[in-house]
Each structure stands twice: as C-alpha cells, then as structure tokens.
Length: 411
Ligand SMILES: Cc1ncc(COP(=O)(O)O)c(C=O)c1O
Image (cartoon, rainbow, N blue to C red; front, side, top):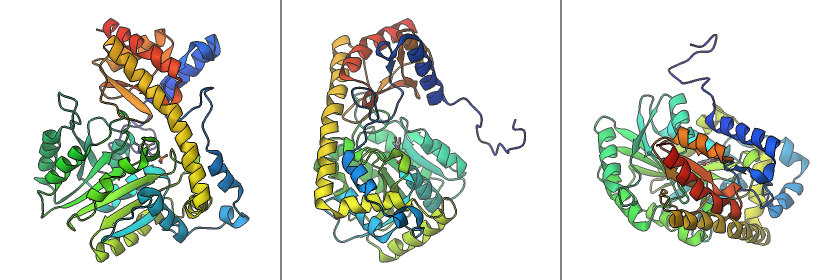
C-alpha cells in the first residue's frame, strides 16, 4: 500500500535487484580488496583496470561544442543535422532505397522504446518480446498501461523458437487489431544472442500472416556497434525494407554504448515505411510523444553525434577506437564460453556483446552462493547474468567453474 502516491496497479518500492547486488559487491571490495572480488553486475564497458571506457574521439567532439550547443533549445523532433546523422549511424554506407526513413531524438534507446509503445499501441494492449529480455521493457509498458507478453526465445536445440513466436503473436492478434513486437539484436541483453538470417526470415514470415492488422516491429539495436562486424550485423536492415504498409519497422538507436555517451542520454527512434503519409504521421506523433514526456532533447549530445557523423575523419577515429575495445571485449566473452564448455556449464547461446546468461532453477540461491566465492552477478528471470563487459579475461576464466559449483550446491 502506498502512503500518498498512487499504486495504479504497479509494483513500487520493491528493492532494486541490480542496485542491491552491486552495493553488496562494493561492500565486499571495501572489506577484502578489489583484486579479490569479481563484480559482474555492471552493464557498461570497463577497461582492464576496472575504469569506464570513454572514447577519446567522442570527447574530442564534446570539447569542440559551442556555448549555444549546450545552452539553446533544440527543436522537439531533434536538430535537423542530428536527424540525418542517426540515419547514417544506423545504415552507414547503405541507406535503404525505395522507402521513407524518418527519425526523432529520444533520450537514449529507452526513450525510443517509450515513444514506440505509446505511439503505436493503445492502453490495455499486449505487446510481444522474448522471455529473456531487458526488464525496463516491462516497466515502460506497464507505466503506459500496456502489458508485455513473451514467447520462448530458444528451442531445445538453442535456436530461435519460431513456433513459440508464431503462437504468441497469433494469440495476441486474435484479440487485438494492433501490436508492437520488440526484437533486441545483435548481441541481445541478457544473452548475447544475435538473430540469424533464418531467424529473421521465420519472424517476418509469421508477421506477414496478418494483412489486416497493424504491426509495429521495433528493433532495439542498443549493442549494434559492439557486436562485431558492422556490415554483417546490419544485413537484417535490408529485410525491413519492402515490407507492406501495415508492418512498420522501427529502430531504437542508442549512443550510450556505441559512442560511450551513457549519461548524455542520446538516442533516436527511426521508422522505415513505403508510405509517405505514414512517414509524415511518424514525425507528427513523435513530436507529441516527446513534448508530453521530456519535451526538447539534449542539444549538446545531438551536436556531438551530428559532428562525428558529418566528419569522415572523426568517424574513422571513433570506429578505430571502438575496434580496439571490441578486441578487448571479445576475448572476455571467448574466455568465458571456452571455460564454460570445458567445465560443462550450460549457457544461453552467446554470439557477442556485453552479457552472457546461465539458465538455472534457483537464480537467487545461485547468486547468493556465488557471493560466497566473492563473485557478484545479477539473478535475472530464470538465470544468472554475467557482464563480460566489466570483467577481465582472467575473471571470465574463473567464473564458469564457480557458477557450476554454485548451481550444484543450490540443488
Ligand atoms: C537491451 C537494451 N536496450 C536499450 C537500452 C537503452 O539504453 P539507453 O537508454 O542508455 O540508450 C539498454 C541499456 O542498457 C539495453 O540494455
């Protein structure tokens, strides 16, 4: 029961799991020293000394900002040069042809998810994502009076569970005229899974079965620029071009990871549509959504992204720096997976990115036992999430056998 605030059917005041485990990790570090604790709770990229990675080339652009870049309002939709820049950031050298692409500033990918749900579904609607998912999807939907329904992401062979997706979509569309689907790829949070060509084909085949329904398909690409080869990972974008009008592909772009601008709150929502009317309407509806939530965006952050994408030399520097850090990140994931195979620890399929997830029956119990080994990780859904982005290769090698033991002990 709330005292003065209104519950409005929400869960409010429950302890924040992530924050809880992360403060326990900090306490243990204070007691026994950083070198004796593995803190795998942090969802950002850290260097080998445990410091936040900040791209120097991005800082170069930040330092070049003018007083007006910081102080003036930006248009509600975003600075025009930013709206173009994010298209380049998403599509690089291969902008889609034959469809309309529009964009709107949002504070991070989070704002894009919020605007997408609010603009393209109605209160009471069910929206669809996978059972393993980033938990704010649920929270944002709930805050807007919508509910998240889940399909099972992996079948028993560890492949995309197309049948489960199809069944869940069919159940929703049996009672609704519209829905929104969230797909988080490449390098899905929390598993690190990347949708394959086949997965996309299966997903789109299912979506195309409902010519009388309106389906918004939101692709959350938060980890796109830290997921490996940029061109390969953007191949799916071509499949979103040429879909019929009643399917609206939306992209949630985030500068948090790819440009290490987590705190500057910079992102965008983009639409791709064969209809000029739907594209115009996108801009109109996004103006209202933004106006009614955060109003104008962070002009300084937009100016930074606009500057980088307009300057080939600077963009090349950003890409080279990212490549360097990708070469730091990948061996961590590889080390964890290699060791997991070695000790026989079953993980969710991992391709790339910041996180690896280990399914288990008693995530809370396993999490607590891991703390006895001075390892701190987040219990998430029916599993434990490891953040390889914030651990060294040596730490990644240590964790699998300890997790295996912790699972065995919690049975
Ligand atoms: C899957 C996923 N989507 C979106 C986001 C949005 O991040 P931001 O709002 O900082 O861009 C995150 C951040 O952790 C994420 O993990």
